[in-house]
Image (cartoon, rainbow, N blue to C red):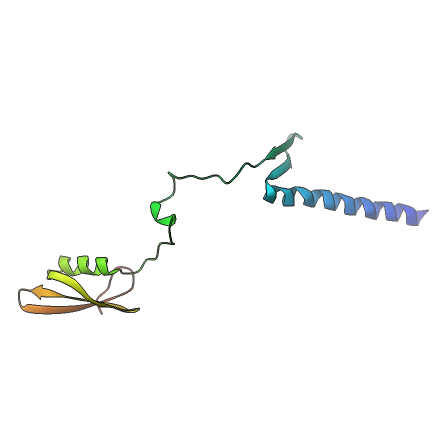
Length: 120
């Protein structure tokens, strides 16, 4: 007699565990089921992903925003430092070389590919 009660209790626990796991997997597929704090039952279907086009910066729609020194930023920084006719001479993984002229003559500047384009 006691073994039948134990088997019934075990099967009830397994059934309740299965019922509790169903809404979590169904929510991933678009169906949700929930019980509110006042005892109300909520059932619904997700129609698709929510898109907030106006709330996210534009740079996140394409590739992830990498905070590195770009050739354009290096030329802009060289120009702000007084280099005239600044143009990119070469670019590699570590540095950007910018050439131009200042009041003394030809100038070659090397900028690191780090945020803020520090001089090397």
